[in-house]
Image (cartoon, rainbow, N blue to C red; front, side, top):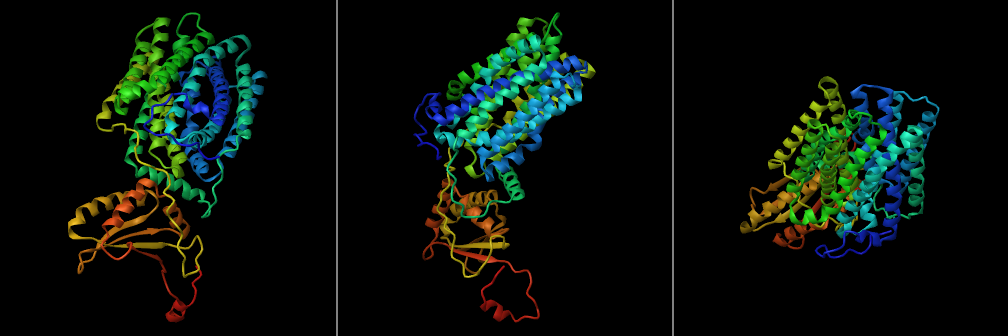
Length: 552
């Protein structure tokens, strides 16, 4: 299925506009039910751990075990999502989580759970989530047009946080009435509607392959290279990691906050999480208006500061109603920051690498959360949870201040859709896709007055070439004929050369068009495509070799 027709990016539209697409509606509804079960399971696991141990570190590690898989496996899942069928990958991940959750429920009902087994099974459920999330996030562009992507991401966040408003409270009631194993069983059942919806979804129409599928190691390297050479994405990853590291202290230590109140039980813990969810709902509802009035950096600073205030209120007061109120801005800040980071990554990345870019963002954010859960648990063990929350608040305020040097980028305005102008040239040599290395040289004739603009455009060309896989890029000027310039670079194989050119976006093509206009020679700039030969057999005559078709 191709994405629906794109509307004007500048047109004002309802925040609910993605619901006009039936497949998005179906998957959104099934995802909401799955999130409901996941939140109930989270309450059950966190509260059961407080019954199995009194160690603050082990209690905080429940949050780590759920988030660490995203740091470890998200990039691998992103590479798979960009090279294989995303729908099948999501079905497999959901099936794995269903089986693991069912095992957790069965062991729970038999009373066989201990702290480390609980952490292990929670970790495995997180592995399934880590594999599922990148293809699901990347599939938003297959379900809605690009102009509706921001609304779709916000609705996904709203759906999750609607369940965060009721799921934890329901989880607290279920755990209080029937025990944690019942919460695990409900979570297992909640995966089934989403599995059915994914099976019924036909997914995007498969495009005809003009080049072999990218090898998995190469796909991983390409994702790392693209993000590393994209300064806007690097800033998002850094801020996301810091936010996740500091903000997770509230979620990781909330069971201890709840248990500190006289007569507290799983119901109070669930209700506090429910307040957090209500705040998140408010943040999602107000998100469009806030984005209209403030730039991205100011929104991120408010999110850091809002979470810091919440952590301080939790640490410095002892009243339940103040704790409940403090969790409202915390939930809103969580949605404002993470949904903004998510949309920024999606709108700053072309489709060929979007799942890998999202996976790296999730690796950074959830890696920060996993590390934070463990570190704040250790601080709470050594100094108490009050002091741990105060220190976390200080780190959050620092995160707001460093925005002066690492500003959150505004949403990209570049057209990152594929240009689709490349046609594979007819070659005189018979080479295979894995043949290489390939050396490319492009010759230009540039007037002296155009040299400053030419160099400016070449700086953009260099950045795009390197992001898309070129190595050893260089710009050469002829010493005897200063008007002659040559752009050169290497590509590992012929297949990689074809992929490199297929990755060109409309934005990249604007630079190519401008360079062609500046070229003063006859016709278009001349392109030389050469394959390197590292050695020639000294027993053979070179001239006959050059006269034969070459098979490499």
